[in-house]
Image (cartoon, rainbow, N blue to C red; front, side):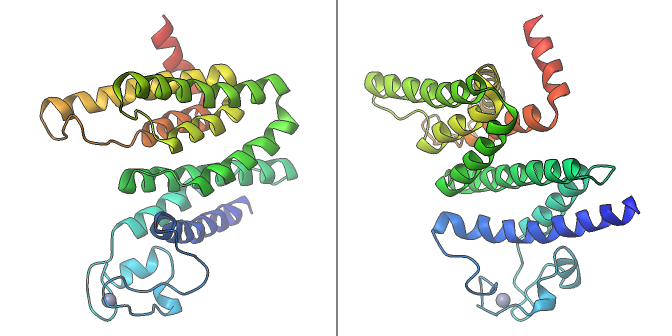
Length: 257
Ligand SMILES: [Zn+2]
């Protein structure tokens, strides 16, 4: 019986993934979604319903538009498959009110972070709408499950520290270090992670960022003054903290001792 639920969780995940693709495509452009059906970006061909089946359509069409045969981005099936697998993994081994609400909570968080991650890499923006949505969900969760000093202090520290650092940096050097979206994301994550958790996130995001950026700078793959999205590093650390807390404890242990 539980196996059947898992199959549903996978299919549901793939369908949500298909919607996330729409968000990733349209949020940065400020376009509305829901209004029109998907079209081929090259020839404007309006997709039929059977061209819109997650993962399967891409395979049947062999990654090409049904009319003009131009390549469809691999991003679509990858996001659909990834969201399906995340949904499957987050779905518990028993059915109860607790496991279902917990699944919905964590799955929504995962979807928001996935959309944030891809949009930030492609456009260097973390959309306000996603930050607000995440903030509301974390806030409702926090009211029920966390003491006030955890979420209030976490949110304030998460917002204030990066804001102050960016402000001082700007006054001294005249350059903007962190984007507004990064600062808001820290604040929002602070609500869930708490004061200590969000400070850990900042430290690890900086370490991850430096470790990856140094070789890219040394081998001149990116230029010194090139704008680099910092959001993906914040998100990567947050994913470990939220979904794999035991692994994060091990990482902390390695750093502290
Ligand atoms: Zn086409």
